Amino acid sequence: MPTLSQYSVVVPAAGIGKRMKTDCPKQYLHIAGKTIIEHTLTNLLEHSQVQRVIVVLNPNDILFAQLPIASHPCIEVVVGGQERCDSVLAGLNYLTDDEEWVLVHDAARPCFAATDLTALLQLAEQGSTGGILATPVRDTMKRAVNVKVNGQNIVKQTESREHLWHALTPQFFKLVTLKKALNTAIQQQTKITDEASAMELLGEKVMLVEGCASNIKITQPEDLLLAEFYLTQSKLSNEGDLTEV
Image (cartoon, rainbow, N blue to C red):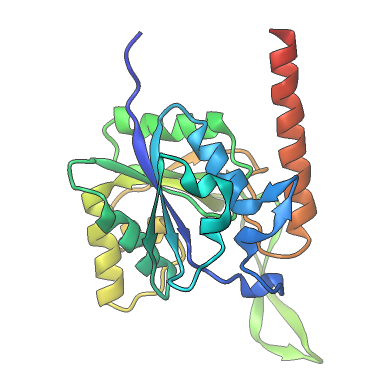
């Protein structure tokens, strides 16, 4: 059986999570017995094709070093920047260019499936530029007008959901190309919200690999219970598999 290629993962974790309305960054909130970032990193490190994880922290972060997982031999830490793209680029610059491919994953996405990551990594074997995990839009999409009445938004029109996808992480691209894309976005002062949007700016093709809808990003307080449910179900499922063996 051929040996599977292994890859580094950059995890930007320098944000402060304003929308969570908590006293600490959201990645340090506890669910299912651990902090969110511990679940995320554990999930990554358990995958056989992940060789190391580069965690990008806020320069004032004093919490990560206190976590047991911070001493894991496959975890390395670098200091991030003000925006997501700055932090991701700091992580990418830490790597050497002899690593052809790299993964980027949100610290606040602890529920991704290992099978989805495996499917994403197969893009490297296909010679693709790279791609992202994504899920097709299922809800009816409304576009609002740029004004509010009595504090409420008004629908301008219904948008077709055909060909619309929710972008998830991990995202997987060639290291040198992604560095060039992020540098270009920064130089042009173009607002990007994920690595794929930087690649699109260069005119690169981005493949969509359909993933599980459970791969949620914890952004709002109500996301905590849902993420805890998914993590608990995943743990029970894994324990069931071990019991059957």
